[in-house]
Length: 244
Image (cartoon, rainbow, N blue to C red; front, top):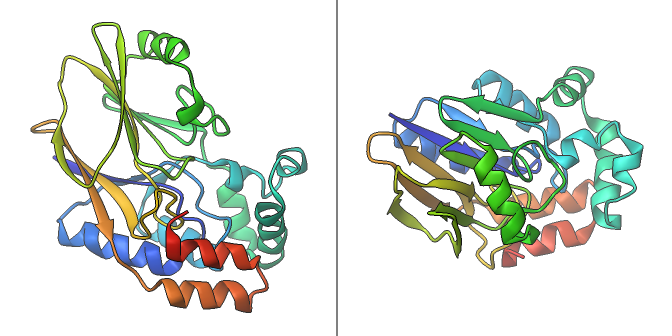
């Protein structure tokens, strides 16, 4: 069985459509999202509508929860904060309520989905977590793989015989060892920050324990133009072209 994991869509409709179509081409029926449906981009309503209509199971991210949490919002940089304030003005009530009711984590089968860091943080960046803390996380979890987002940078962390092995998750297929445990950051659909401007997502195959990081091209210019038209911060548009 295969399922897809996406994350950090950030209201980028063009990137989402391109990724969703690629997922359908791979004949995958089940999709999980590691949070941040909204923020930065111009199409929050369309994204939430698509997530609901396509039964995509999503956790909440920090941008999602900041929609109604001013204390959380105050921790954002100026561009992210301005975007959330504009998003509050345009998002429909039913989608506002949907976002606020997203769970912090989803546990299914032998997998965990959380935005930031296992077991239940939507604000902690996994890239800054020390090896000692990671060891404690792995020891306490029963999940084979914890899927995360938040940093927008694909990464794979392996727990092997008490050792932490960290590496960049590159495009393409790799096989995991079923006797180990993993934390996998699936990158970002809507705002990549790994110096590659393609939208990204992961396919996991339960039959052979394989992870496949996909790169998907989309119409960046169209998204950027909509960002500027909505008077969102121009940096939100500029960074899309460079994947930063």
